[in-house]
Image (cartoon, rainbow, N blue to C red; front, side, top):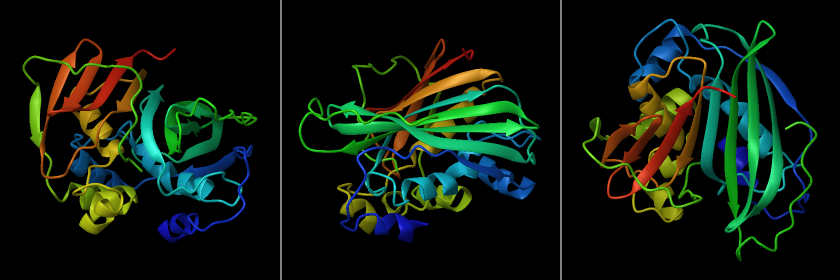
Length: 275
């Protein structure tokens, strides 16, 4: 998977628009796989999938889609800046899910261009889960002069590029967590996401980080494991700043919002009923 991703760095002519195809596939986890994921992310053992686990089932296909020859950017260097998950119903732990996936809405950004990866999971013909992952391709200039490519017919965490001036929550934290140095490799083992900025000191330094950083989807899973939303719900997450492994982060909550912060705001989430 990552050899294909690295190969996308080789110079070649690239299309100017996102591919318009929709990818379909199925995914199913074993009880042991989910239990291992639960242990790494802090979820309680139950007979239901954690709300972030369909992302894991779809990860390999998302990498395949974004490393294909008709994709306009190298997949290496894309920054995962935001994620929205809607869970419409609880999903049995060993359910065989049917997925649809596509990329859409290539648009200017002040630091380059960004787009959305849309993934939908169905069980017995009923949509039970939907995700929008927003990625940034950093480019020179402000992004204001970069034309937006046409949208498609359907529809690794680095230093995220937050929008707006969200201020971190204040007050006493609900919890303070030390992030073990092994978190990157532990999460890679249960997720399949072996991006070296999370698992290797040399890999992290190659991308400008002094040491490995936590996966963004691990941090979102860790928050959801703590606040335990009940389906149906939508969580809107924005990745603000990387979490360095070996450090500490504080979880604070207020109303529908939950944040992870230290000296910086790392992750902010809003949880609400789905539209």
